[in-house]
Amino acid sequence: MTVLSFRSVLWSCVGVSFLELAHAHLEDRGIVTSPETFAATNFDFVVVGGGTAGLTVAARLAEEEGWTVGVIEAGQYRPNDALIDVPKNFGAAVGNANYDWLYATVPQTNLNGKVVRHPRRHANKHHSGKVLGGSSAINFEMFNRPAKGEFSGWSALNLGLGSWSWSGLLPYFKKSETYKPPRPEDVFPLASTTRRRAFQRRQNTTDAADAFYTAADSALGPTALDVDDLLAAASDGSDTVSKRDDAYHGSSGPVHASHNEWYSDLAHPYILSMNSLGVSTNFNPDSGDNVGIYNCPASVDRDAGVRSYAAPAYYAPNAAKTNFLVLTGAQATKINWKSSNVDGLAVAESVSFAVNGVSYTAQASKEVILSGGVFNTPQLLELSGVGNPSIINPLGITTKINLPGVGENLQDHAMIPLSFTIKSDYLTWDELRNNATFAAEAAAEYAATKHGVLASNIGVLSFFPLQRFLTPSKILSIVSTLVSDLCSSTSSMSLLQIAQSVLQLAWLSNQSIPQVEVVMIPGFNPT
Image 1 (spheres, rainbow, N blue to C red):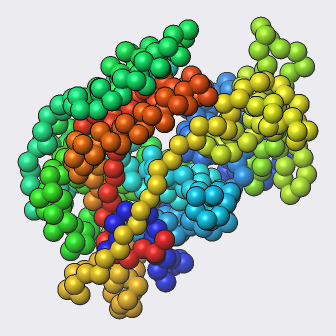
Image 2 (image 1 turned 90 degrees about the vertical axis):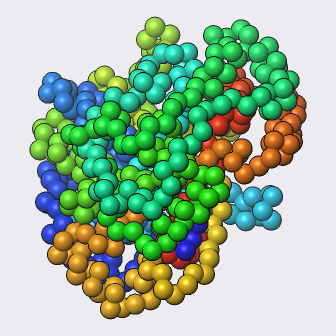
Image 3 (image 1 turned 180 degrees about the vertical axis):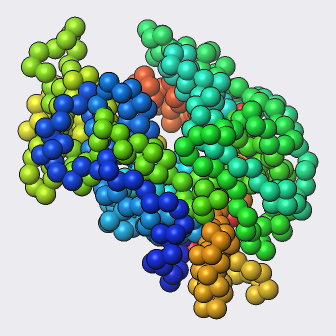
């Protein structure tokens, strides 16, 4: 068993051809194989990046028949691919250059010069997918939602504009999904149904944080952001309900969300152990209250037995449309600007891209939409003259827009894998690796029914705040050190960094905002 590990073991049957029978052939008529044809098309919108968000936006725009939408994607379209589609194969494509950008950090001074692989993880635990569908094609399929209060933070940072709050986004969560609830026998049958304590705001860290809040209030004074508004957003709590409520789920969206129908023998004792440690079972984690241990939904079409991701969800149903074109194997290299600004603003008019070393240009009469991900989007902006002049000018790039925040403020979370030896009489995923007969039977079952162990994925997930395992004095010590660091660096922080630090500091005392995620993976997963 591995806890807090996100690596999957590639079992020997991943190349099986039976996957083609798992679901209908995906349309590929919208794929453009000729870069010349793509460049000659008069687009209204050009979307850079055919990943999770890019395909969604492109498909929605293409609903308007009078608009022509083009998508530039560096990866390839890979329908009926066992590495992607078989649910248990999550992670198998990670580290494979045909699917993954293989990003890594520069040598880290505090790690003795070690270079660390730098994947992107979540909206459902993401890696940087270099394939049509992006990270949704190679991530770990967990389809869970953040805490309600974190969306309140988004809304506060946007001054309440744009419906970035929980209530503003929930209708779109529902619109995007077809949710299949767990079977009655699969809803943690042996787990305690004790509901967690209602949200109670703790004051033990507030006094320590006041020094930074005062500094932040002064720094944000000239702006429309207000510390009191940010703190109000950070303390937004929600009640727990005792069962799944369709008010939080969709029934006709393009992305399928479902639950396991196969669980290892470790699931029940593990859940009971977490309950005994004060981590109560959460029966409605998609409600905006994600504290507790719960049965995590997965982006899996349970009827077809395959991963549900952006390519089959948003590209395939629209592939036959004449106003929706996708060019794969193309790398966007630069945004090109109109020769003169419009109302004082720089306006994009086209995108340069390369295929097999040859450069082309795609015109966009309305908008260029960047959806290359957390790394590729800022890179393309900087290559196009949008960024910090002190970084891009020495590289021979003329500054078009002085925007120092481009490429800065990346935040990620650390992962700590722990592996344990278990008793031999517990059935886990390890049987697929250690027992050839079991693996063959599992492959046959999956081929015939689309169910069984190969249709399973990570199902047991838990989130909880620091207060569940640290004493008030320890938390106070951590916060005091953090506040000292923040106060000493406020003068060098951007206004956005100051505002988000107000939120994050306040969240440490809000027990409805978890800081720790624990995942139980029922099998050995080397990292």
